[in-house]
Amino acid sequence: MKKLNLVNLFAHADCVQTLPAGHKIVKQGDPGEHFFVVLDGQADVIINDLVVEQMGAGDVFGEMTLIDAGPRSATVVAKTPCRVAIVDEKRFLFMVQQTPHFALQVMHVMAQRLRRRTS
Image 1 (cartoon, rainbow, N blue to C red):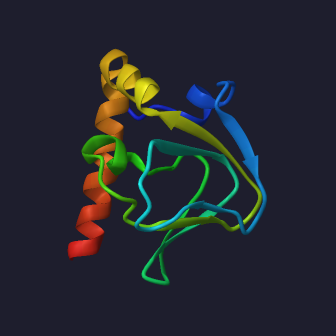
Image 2: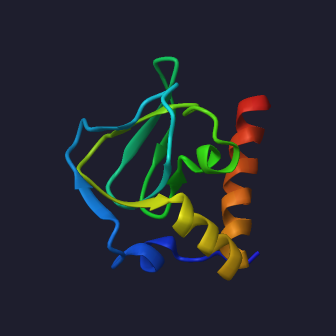
């Protein structure tokens, strides 16, 4: 599978924010309207007060809420100052339609996370 460089893809987008260390980016159980691409920095993924994954440049999170409209399955906190691209549903659907490799990459991430949680 061809892997897209998501940092380059979103680096100059108008949806980029810089967040301080300790900032709670999303909270488990909350509704969501965006997914995120980490452009720089590190973030912890926390489920039920346990860090289950660390995110870095090029990683994505929050994609499930755009697919099934369900609540956030985890809390994500900036471990270091982070630059993130905040992607709404309209942009997400555009990316899925116009860049099939983007959709495959998101599905690959979801499959990997599911395998880690169930094995």
